Length: 77
View 1 (cartoon, rainbow, N blue to C red):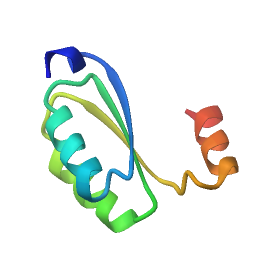
View 2: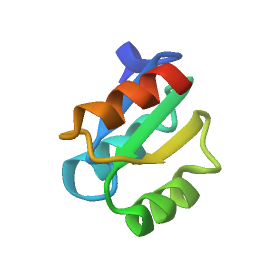
View 3: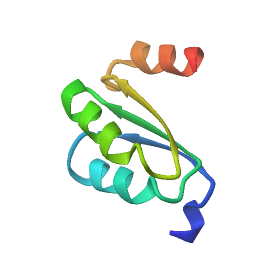
């Protein structure tokens, strides 16, 4: 995990499965986690779960299979 210390990390599919596990693990070492998922409820739960860790967290409900969504996120953040 040392490699990820103080990094900015973007995780798609963060609301469940491997994405969720990665987010929880990396929230203790990363500087910033950008969490993306199309399920808002799961994403909000995850954000609360990671909230007391080291990383600052940006959580966005987003379907990255729609190119315009990802373009707007990139331009607005």
